[in-house]
Image (cartoon, rainbow, N blue to C red; front, side, top):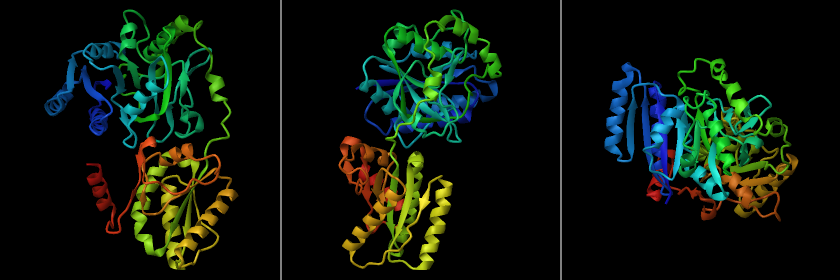
Amino acid sequence: MNKVSILILTHSEIGSFKNCLQEIIWHNTRQKDYEWEILVLLNGVEESLKQKYYEFKKFYEKKFNNIKFFESDKNLNFSKANNFLSKYAKGDYLLLINDDVILVNKVNTIKEMLDCFKRYENVGVVGARLIYPNDKIQHAGVGFTENKPQHLWWGFNDLHPSVMKEREFQAVTFALAMIKKDVWEKLGGLLEPEKDDFEYYYEDIDFCLRARELGYKIFYCPNAVAIHYGSLTAKKVVNINEALKNLPNFMSKWKDKIKVDYYDFMNEKIPDDIPRILVAIPISEQNYWLKEFLLHNLLSLYYCRDLLTIFFIINNSGIRFINELREWALFYGKMFDLKVVFPDEILFENDKNKIIVETRNLAIKKAEELNMTHIFFWDADVYIPYDTLLKLTKINDDKYPITSGLVPYKDDFNRWMAFKIRDDVKNLNEFEERLKQMSD
């Protein structure tokens, strides 16, 4: 089993650091795919914050024997600090993460990055999809213009088709990146200021380019996702102009070795095979109590919202309920940035089999009208985990290009589960407790 050494530098953003550390621990303690350790450097911590950091150190080192804190009186630069921590790392892989990066709890980002190494040969570094709190892209790979390295698709929607493609780049950011330990050691870690002048912003790019010179590949993994709250780690850099003073040094070293690819990536054609999914949800007055579960699932659909249209198929219901459902669905659809539509007709039928057939036909008609590629029939009493819809589209049979049927209860190959809610479970808290019991 592989072991991941997680390196965190923290200087003064104690609230951000706490959230970063807790989310990493939450991920690591809920998986059995890899071993892990966390190495934290208190990097020239301000005197007024030392006591609080020491309380964290005492608490976490007592609770976990694989979490260790180190301290530097000086605020070391990014290269020196990570090189220092790496000397104590016992893992096969190093995960560098800024203390202003928070892992998304809907997906195991660390496992996704490990899996990326296994999918391709000679991978030395894997980068992640980093999103600002406003759901815009901060990092989805690094490209090069004639004058500088530049983040690709910066400020784009976090689900833009170009940022959802796993692929090789010349470089990725080390705000969150996984590096093979033997590659790190072959390169002697990150270049330090005594050896070079680019102290911030370019050590990671330089490392990637040096790794490529040794024949290693640099991959970007979109399924590894985290929220990036800014540039809190690089406290010495007052503004970006100060950081860019090092750009001439960087470019003079690499200008004849890099490929200018930024414009090719930014102008690439969006593929025609991006799925467009109609989520068909039959609902009636009899199961309207399930709106708590619907709300929970609408939140999970948020992560692939650009691909979806939610289609509520109303049956055996009166006008008061219909108006109430429309108001509820449109309100939460707007909140979660989801497109919500309703049928032109209401189905009235007591025969369950006929209702299923009519519901299916109505959904297919709407999907054809909206030019959808898939229909996802979703019973209102089924819990749907993150990313289920996209995984269903990948396994859907080409013979049925427009429909993909109901949710299966379990599919080990795609590593996700959906649970049918029992009739005696009447609220979300009971349901989550039932799920916890089942997972235990």
